[in-house]
Image 1: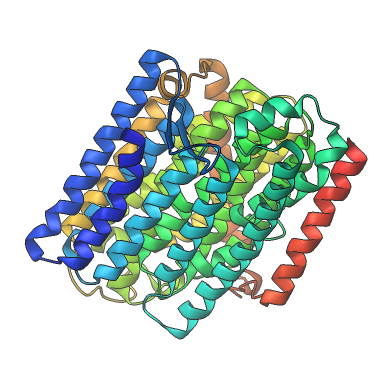
Image 2: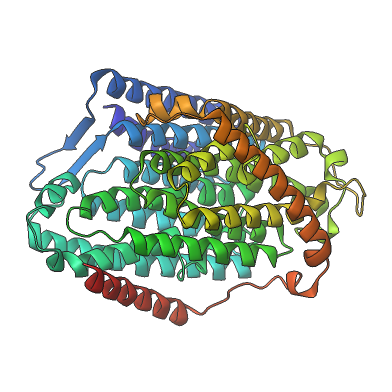
Length: 531
């Protein structure tokens, strides 16, 4: 019953707010989201105490195949999703009833994302992905502005093509094994020839790569996350929550295929290239939302590397960084929305004095920036520490240091908005509900950093420890890198034409589709010659 409630409650909440939009029902959203968070915690503690997953099915499994399962990891992610949507509701509090259709679509996305994390069979995963994509596209295009309509359609069509690759791969697996249950397929993988599942593996991983915006199929993400017409909370939801469902599917299906197909080295390389390209394009932006969008691409590459390495430390670091990124990227997108609203521009070169004009927003944004760059004691610091502990001495470690340096560099550029030199005046005072939402996320970035080891061991059941001496080395490295990034930005990046061009990778839909097809053949060819 808990699992059904977590999936259906957001939909009924959105419907209720749509058909009965009374001002006094504004508090109903906060109440329902709070109850969902309470139920999500109850779900986690039930699993923790019993030591076994919670399963639920609707009707005859052999006919409908509608089965749900919540294990320890998925229950933690459901807690994260419900907590973030509660914060999103607080952020939207004074504008909840301005557009009832927006509320219905927004909370329905929450429902489909939770379904993605709880689905036990592959077809339900496909349905959840596709429905959430359609709903997200409607949110992007809701204002019907020309640029937003274009960006939303590219987002929808690109992800639909990726979902079709995924569906075709699922159909081939069903023909081979006769089941759609993820765990049953994993058991059967031990007795099958790897060559027999190479095509469905390549199809499914191509679809997941599109959803996760891995290289070279990431051009849709800056359009969707950085489009001018989408409200900041939609960009926060897309970057903080929506795209994480793709990463979770990758982790789950990587584990499903692992007995027959091991392509970890290939995806480690894809992750590194994705991260480096994200850094380069983020440095070339002057639009604050595009900087954050390309930053998401870079961080997705970093997480892909972490979760593709079979080590307890990198696994803990990767899962923690998924959660951490959801928090500080949601914070930064919502803070950027407040800044853009106040200054009437998204160009960071035209915004100064934010710290003086919007102090609470600025404090929260600083916590987000420090978190994503891995500052000591913040959540990003500990998740990156665990990742680097698992690859210590390997060649990947140097790349990870470079990626962290690149992250610092573009966030030094992003943080110039805080310089206390006013260029233009703001319009009005800060919104208290949005201040509260940002403050909660800022505190979460700090508390989840301080309690990273506890979260990993208690919530994720991955026991990792922080070695004080190696962590102090990481702190010293962070200080050195931040100093170097400040110097490099001042000497080589600031006001250089190459870094002020603000290009968008504006590929046509035909070219995007071609890149998806090419990625499929690259994955297939790499798997064929590797296995």
